[in-house]
Length: 153
Image 1 (cartoon, rainbow, N blue to C red):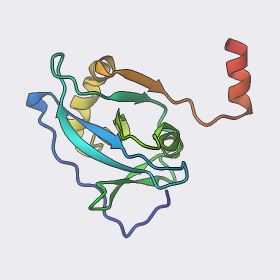
Image 2: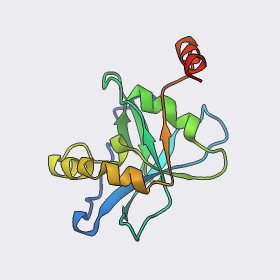
Image 3: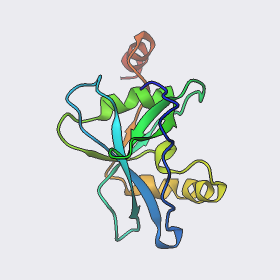
């Protein structure tokens, strides 16, 4: 994902906090890991009795320096800046045939308005607890990670 400054930033639709709103990201399928990452964002209601099907991603954001652009809203071609660590995770998480519903804090929470960010951060434990699965991304495989995994497992 290269940085293209001619592409508009994604405009988030406000959440309905009074109705327990969150956003879910649908990671669209692609035949190869090298294909552009494209996703859609949608607002949904999340309560104990109203739980959409989704997985949550836990990872470290990494440095905000040299961000990549994640293509959102397939038809409008808007983008969201994301960190390198998330840029590396998404091709590994993407299916070749089926869309995948994910909750990823850096994308699903509009980081600009402090009020929304604060409310959503307070709900994170609840969001993770209602996910079908929590995926932990430790980063791309390297010599250190292989040694660590071999040592502990």
